[in-house]
Image (cartoon, rainbow, N blue to C red; front, top):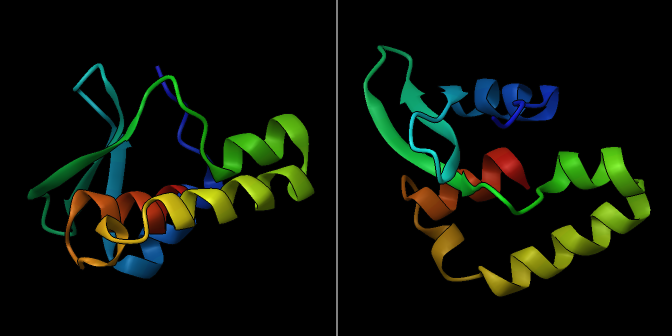
Length: 92
């Protein structure tokens, strides 16, 4: 099971959403609005994210991985409300 990092909780608070460990075994977190309505599942398990890279390899390495992620996902991360948007905002 993926351990949600404080970074993700902080980002969720800024976006006005709540996060919980995903019930989908292939995803890291489920995103809900403040009334508890499900929005989407984000973050493929088996892949690291920004807070995980910081923890394992340090900030410099994590910043480079973040830069590459944002290039790779430049199209899907800009659609507000999409799973790509929430993955970008919550995990990167």
